[in-house]
Image 1 (cartoon, rainbow, N blue to C red):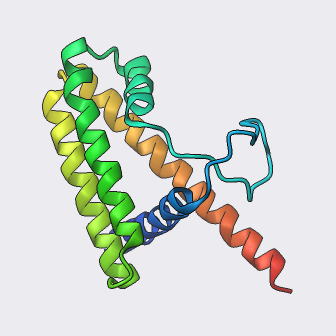
Image 2 (tube, rainbow, N blue to C red; image 1 turned 120 degrees about the horizontal axis):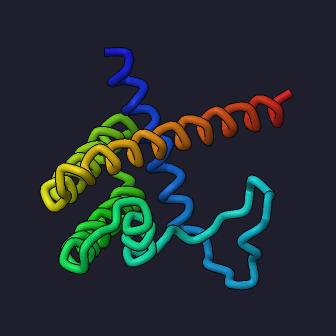
Length: 146
C-alpha cells in the first residue's frame, strides 16, 4: 500500500514537472548543457523518444512506426491532464498512472520477449530518476524556506 501511495505521489510530481515543461516557453537559445536546476527544456518529441528506445531495444522499423503514435498520444493526454484544473492532485496522479499503464501495455504488446525485460529496466531507471528529481526539489524547497 505504501509503495502504491509513493508511486502515485511520484507520478503526481512527474505530472507537475511535465505540465511545467509543457507550459514553459521554448527558447532555442537555451544551451542544453545548462546545469541550472531552474532551466527548463522542451520535452522530447515522440520521434526522439522512439529513437532513444531504439538505441536500447533495437526496434524494428515496424515497431518504430507503431510505437511513435502511442508515445504521441501519451504526450497529448499528459499535456491535457496538466492543463486540467478541475481535478485534484490525487485524481491527476491516478489518471497519469492510468495513461502510462495504458501506453506501456500497448508498447509491451509490440515488443519481443527479448526486448520486454530491457523495456522494464528502462522504466525502472526512469522511476528512479524521477524519485531523485523529487528529492532534489524537496531539498531545494527546504533550502529556500529558512
